[in-house]
Length: 419
Image (tube, rainbow, N blue to C red; front, side, top):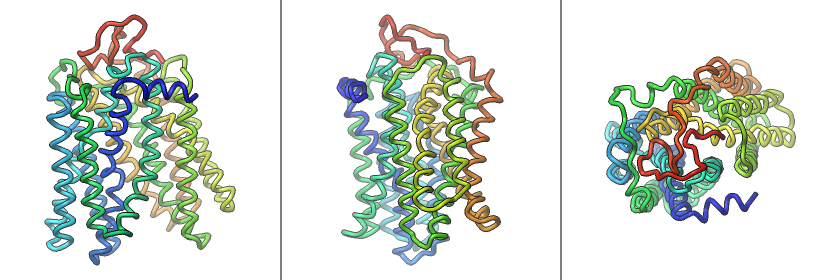
């Protein structure tokens, strides 16, 4: 199992790109908790803290596909680094002015969100040319999904350490400065500097003109909704048991399950079309969410949370392959950025729905939102099976994605990604 991942990491530039991207995405992965902690430290209410965090999330959702399209048109360094700097300056302004005047604080948060660089989509656009072989690319997608789980676990811990040692304002500035360094590491690398998207058809919809991509985005909106609802449901469950630490155990178990599932998924080569495989994985994901409605005792619930997480990273990793197959030529970064946006919007919707569900029917109802999200995600994939069965691009033997005109011919690698 480890040999396959080491093979990916030994490829030239691979470790640098993966590490740089994760570090560069640190501000985005920690922004919500950093904003809440800073707002509370400045005397703001939880309502205001939530509103500012939501404004950041909405701005990020708007900015990601727009910046992703700009990357496809103009290359990575010309977009990624300036965006990272502007985003960091937005957070620095927020840390400097605090909550007074409030309109300026809101503007600063929105600037930070809308200019969050699309490093996630950019990395996935680079993998085919960096790794060459199809099996390496698919394993890198799984490794990327696993790395996200690590980042979203370690990132908040880093914020709390910085707050404990200094202050929430220092945490905001330091985290975003680190993010700029990560983006700088990526854009100075040879693959990022030389990467160019394939020529694209001029169309105002860009990547969204692909029906297969729209179907995938529709499904992953509900996957995001399921995951977002669990964060609220977990808090309600911890409150029911009178111990705030229970929430941490549940989230840790969920992350551990995703880590195990992602590592196992990427350790082997898979036969058959990835679209069919994705339906099976999402079906198992939905089945994993449904037992959470039972809300048993803490030990059993922790086990169920771990089980619920097992198929999350594989679903995300498989979705990356499907995106690459269905993204119109010349739109790969934008397409990946749309997946990030849709997942994030779904998570926000799940958070919004789970809250009223707790008040109306109790904790079990909030976990029912997660189960319903998983079932809805599967329903979308089943309903759009014919659309997803026809990739946008025809297979061509190249060492990179068809969206990358830098790819050189090499027998045995099909960018049609017959996984």
